[in-house]
Image (tube, rainbow, N blue to C red; front, side, top):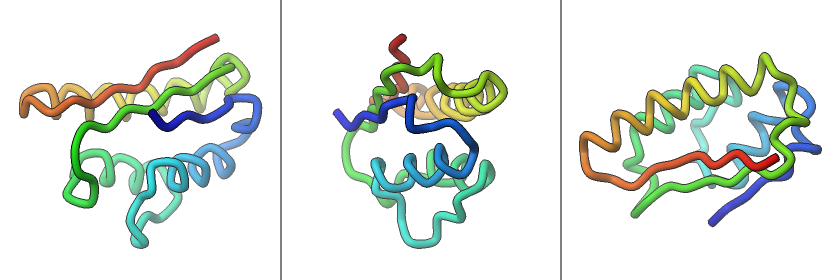
Length: 92
């Protein structure tokens, strides 16, 4: 399972860049919230389940963590209806 260390995700740019890298987003990923939402809503670029673990998640500023979890929750609900495994795990 891919993972990120929340201690390295202290601002929006670092967070979005790290997500694009660790999840191997397509080249058209625009490194912004809308692009994250679009990539997670259309997984044609990714085979199989999509899981992500973020350790030390409390180190991510609360405002960023809330937007991130909202986007992942919407995508998870969408993929659950399709029967596709998809989850974000936040630890500590």
